[in-house]
Image 1 (cartoon, helix red, strand yellow):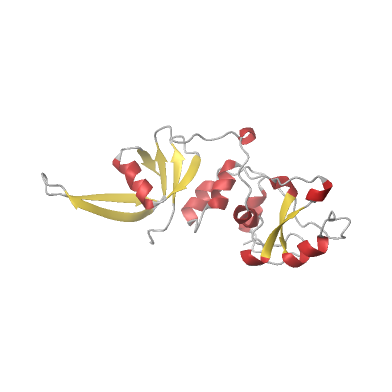
Image 2 (image 1 turned 45 degrees about the horizontal axis):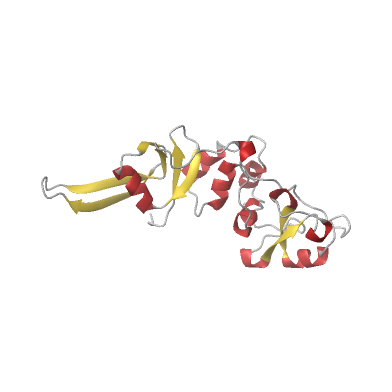
Length: 199
């Protein structure tokens, strides 16, 4: 397993908080802030040798760790609006243009405002979708109805757990299962992650 693999950190109640790298995880283990582990073993890291005991330190890091402390608190659904950026938007929409339905690389995608900014539309999760450049240029400053384009899915604002998933890089199967358990039952991400069309 590459040391670049992210570890999912939760609070002691098991609510997802953030992604941390192996260095941060080792600090959490060393300072005894890890309450328990939920994930599979990822790394076995070996440190220096203790001058008194002659023993070498070893830290086993799991893919999901629950931590004590007050570093971050889990936001309530109504009190949190995740930051909007193209990386997480494109992941929310599974790298599909929500007008033509084709899958694209991130460099070939753009952020489209369903209600255009020039029509007092807002740059918010519920008014933006992933669009290929061709569809975005065709729609221009019009609404989908005016451009005679059908929107394939309704844009939605991710919850905190959904946003943690969207921010992740190379999310492992056990991390994905853990995060999905915290998605709302009605989350469109359930279908998108299960359907071969959205994967």
